[in-house]
Length: 566
Ligand SMILES: Cc1cc2nc3c(=O)[nH]c(=O)nc-3n(C[C@H](O)[C@H](O)[C@H](O)COP(=O)(O)OP(=O)(O)OC[C@H]3O[C@@H](n4cnc5c(N)ncnc54)[C@H](O)[C@@H]3O)c2cc1C
Image (cartoon, rainbow, N blue to C red):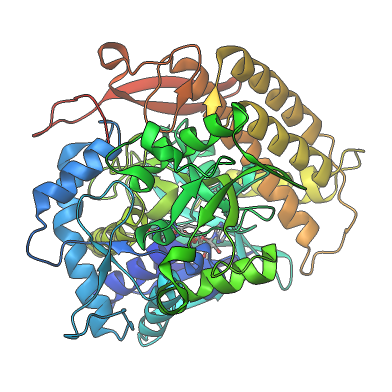
């Protein structure tokens, strides 16, 4: 097997991975950086971000206000020292992207424009029409490609992380073109592999969002944190689940039930449609469950009405939304409301890391949606994720560069590499069972959608855990039709499914244990937030019998937990 080596290896070429690569390469031009991605960088999910990126740029806003909004939005589960750091760094990132050529939408005087967004009490979402992520990704990709010390491994699939003792030695990866496995040695590794919301049936996420990096870290002995908190976005377009940005409500859109009523007045009288996502998603679900949803061929839905915004503004600010709604739902929002309902959208949990993106394994850093650095707590505010990817991508790049300068390579363990080769080629590609990937994958998605959705209960979660464990057993008996090595998308699908089986088990176990309702985790049988017992982060460790849960405290600096009303 071929062994390659780079000082720093970044897994993931989304917003966090590309930002990390630029920071590392800039920090020391002698450091050699590799960026590995299972898809071409600009096909990473980050390119789909629409509404904007939060940062303080104007008078009237303040660090404390952005921090408070984030902490309150998180239902007090965010670590406040991390939030304060994040908020202070975010504006630098907007300016850096501006200098690198990002075409931000601007005001008449030429300054970067900002729009209102759910849960933010000041218009601080910087945007490029409704294609913010697209422009951010193309800007970062262009910038990264100007460095001689960054090498890209496009269409390589990382299968495992090699942690030895308490530090990283490298990873194993398949070159998809040939199907051959290689070992890539590194002094430092940054995991930036994104979220896993594809474990649901109705989701805004790309097919690639299968949480591979989270599962690899978990299997290598690192804890996953706060995985029970999954965000449901209020405006997934029916029937595809494709996102209608919160920016549509930021520009003034209304949510309306079958009686033509703006029902948010009963749930968040002050903020209305601009309440945080957990609150709006619960409100929509309640409206539908109580019979006030509109009925269509794909089930009940809520209407997102943009007509009063007018064609000119829709075309200027929301051109992608108009195009997508017209082509994929047959509804032109200039003339008709868009059918929407809550869709799985974001994972607040991820690999346990601190403000410097360090993890319990030295030389191993994490950034972006696969990481849980405690910024978003139990519920993320819209537009805070892309800022998070930029801020902590940059931190991870610098920290990894410092680490790589003062550490040497470790020899990857031959036994571990041999075991991984056996798992992938004999255990999965060569398996002679009779189970198939699509059947297990769809069953898993169904379980998650039935029992681990906007509203949860102890009985439902217990059932989901039993069923998920059964699916894991069935996976051992898998059969893949395509037995060739080259570009084997069946094999990739099976590897991804295997990762998601672990992640769902952790998510369900954490949700079952947490007997309270906080942020996006709503238990019908424990409907109140319980700070006495549950103001703490969940850590899940991998054991042979499933996840072992431990808890660590939340850091409070200025804002003691208070009632959360909007
Ligand atoms: C439709 C949509 C709209 C959104 N809009 C906004 C918004 O307006 N504002 C906001 O702040 N947030 C938004 N978000 C959230 C935000 O876009 C994401 O959280 C963020 O972009 C994630 O970036 P990332 O770099 O962590 O991961 P991603 O962009 O998902 O990139 C993951 C990378 O990891 C690579 N990878 C994964 N597994 C492997 C593997 N096994 N081997 C090799 N490579 C691998 C992939 O190829 C990819 O390059 C939106 C999300 C969605 C889905």
